[in-house]
Length: 308
Image 1 (cartoon, rainbow, N blue to C red):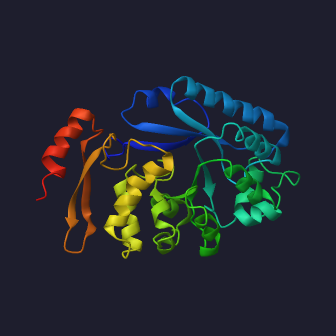
Image 2: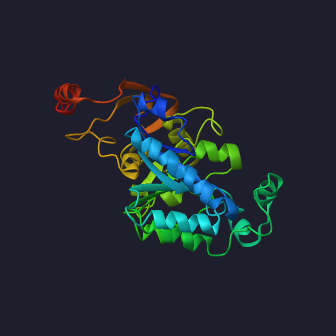
Image 3: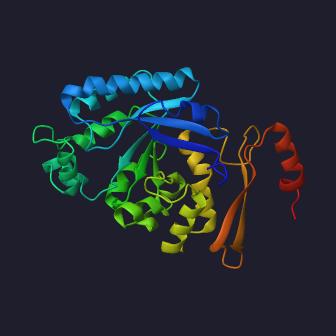
């Protein structure tokens, strides 16, 4: 990721195994400890394990929060525990897998579909623990306590679905992971919806992980979006890849060139400047991973202040 010019990451996890790697990395991390479980009898155990992992990250001085996996994978008891934990004090940023599958509604209401069948096969779902109709309201009840929430994927989100979040633009961010969506669902979100003035300033980009991607490169995600939605400008794509992502994670140090910040500096090569688009040959070169004060002074002197 560092070689691909990535300076800050929101990492979805469920344990503390990666603390050593993250603590010694040049990359800044916020870790989302994920809750997953429909068995009410195990809710206390699952929540306690998440809280223990959170404490380990906190003791290491790292940014961390406990979050739900998805509306269809949490018992009512887990939602209630999570809600209570968000009351005092609430985490500054949370995340959830959001409308990644077209089967989420059927799963929650009736426990039907391929996703439900997979859960049953693995012993995760029975007729007694099908999520109820109010799963979405429980999600919103939790998130109203938090300053920022990352809705990850949005592959099957409609204009109507997104409108409820657009009315609270300071809270909700939309994370698009197009290469992962093509790999898992062979489908992309309605990208044009996210380029609207109401939503575009809260859109950011992710890779999901190497479990559903062949590389961890934000530039490659930008190329996919441009390929399928060429009307989205390069300027907007760059903002989605930089400033918006830093804002979503609550990092005041990354995402833009401003006094007091320490962003990385990346060079994107082989741009078609006539059309202002990326090309198949476009690549990213990390010129400076993080601008420390002395480097920032030199950068300002030789680049930003040189109008040519």
